[in-house]
Image (cartoon, rainbow, N blue to C red; front, side, top):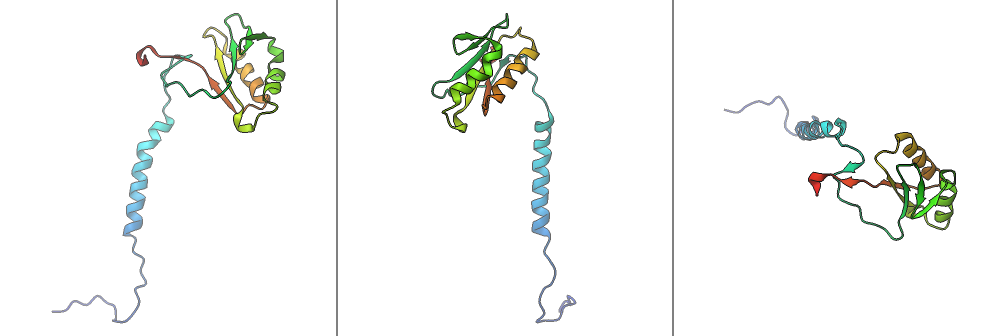
Length: 141
């Protein structure tokens, strides 16, 4: 007994097979469901400590340090906060864009606004990469 599929023999199949499309869409849905909470959830840390491993240092790192009494040091030389941008611009004038990297070390008791102003001056000097130096968490040691 033969079964009739409603098609005549010799005609082309004009329907799209959606099964592979549905499979791919389900896989993508699962991936987004797993990664969405990771993107929206914040990490609770007590600044300025961090549990991240230290970054590799590049040659001649430029370090800006802000002490508790708001003194600003460029590497180990004390400078006026107003001179920060000009001094950093002078250091990086002959370096490539990809080689402009500064590490910012600020005391935990320095007000947030002072740190943000220093970051803004560093960015205005043309620095592409600005890293914040922190102490590792006690549990990470």
